[in-house]
Amino acid sequence: MATVDELIQDARRRMDRSVEATQTEFNTVRTGRASPALLDRISVDYYGQQTPLNQLATISAPEPRLLSVQAFDPSSVKAIEKAIMESDLGLTPSSDGKLIRLPIPQLTEERRKELVKVVRQMAEEGRVAVRNVRRDAIHHLKELVDNGEVGADEEHRAEELVQKVTDEHVGRIDDLLKHKEGEIMEV
Image (cartoon, rainbow, N blue to C red; front, side, top):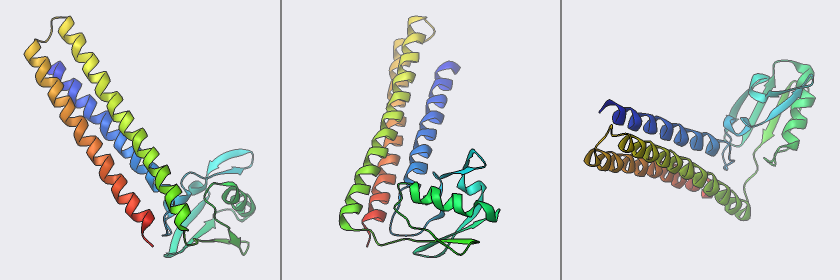
């Protein structure tokens, strides 16, 4: 009996991780509001090493439409500006040598629709990851049945439970998507 429970617990844990990964991806998509998480994906060429921006600077949102980046090492300011310019965020940094300011422009209707498509794709990837976990769990259940460790009734109950857990996690991703779409389309 413990093996079926362990299998379901493992599936639940892996599905939780898929939902969290999707949430993290959503945070890197720009909405009309300034959020330090926007810069999470940016890496800076710092002395020949690709280094995450948040390890080189303090990122804050002093105003709803402004991000500020305070570099720990003033000599890295140019490299940070370059990395931001080359990113897909469409932000233009302005710097006074110490502090980099990133005004967040209003999103056009067209850009909002593009971002919604990007977010929907991310959500679909999250759903696929959750379904892959379900497929693995059911595959392992079948192995237990084939080895004679679990009976058919037990397998049926476990499959229903795995499906219930899957539906629950897909629902959480859908809720995250609905929230993020609302955030993007909000003017």
